[in-house]
Length: 292
Ligand code: MG
Image (cartoon, rainbow, N blue to C red; front, side, top):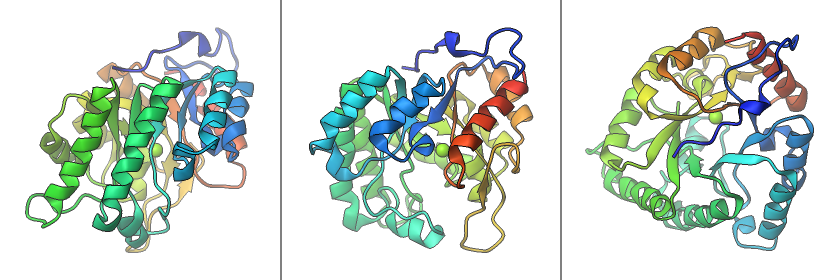
């Protein structure tokens, strides 16, 4: 169920940038906000493996859908996972995230479940083997009045993926590793895993990424290279920064990834900043330069 690895994308022997045991991919919509151009932008920079970000919901069923599929096909890049997301999500701070992100809000849940199922259909068109998502802040486990409904919605999406041969990966970091493990034990389906994003543990203040990786190691199906600082104000997130400039200890993390035998790609994510494209290219050089 894991992604196929294209070893040919590694930096060549003797490359002054160094090399990496892992293929290095990119979160494609960070590279170019034009969704129809972004696949080609990635390919032009030598990225063969991408994760895709959320689409406007209208694109899932409207005429843009065919244009999106055609753009992907012409670019020849491999989509490792499609991140699903929904209209109206707002990551400004913890309060807006709690209200608007993922499947947490009962008012939008049913509609968003249908949108998530539409992503499955699109994933099949573009050959993506999995969906991934921030599902929102988890409701209080078991004692919360809405926990069962939330869990039921996630299980329905996971089961929809399974029926079509896809896996479903939880993006890490909005909760602690142990909270996510508890939730996954409640989901209790074989077709689940995590996309490990070390920066999110720092940005959301949910734990040391190295310790989180130890806890989640058996579940890692994808990995984001992203960096950031711890939050300084209650209710706010930390600041995301270019790789190598924040609190993520990439040398230690990648050594740990090597130790646990993760052999999937590393995907560079750069959500903010005015020079995301340049930051992403610098991040690739940084990771290769670690020579791990
Ligand atoms: Mg991420």
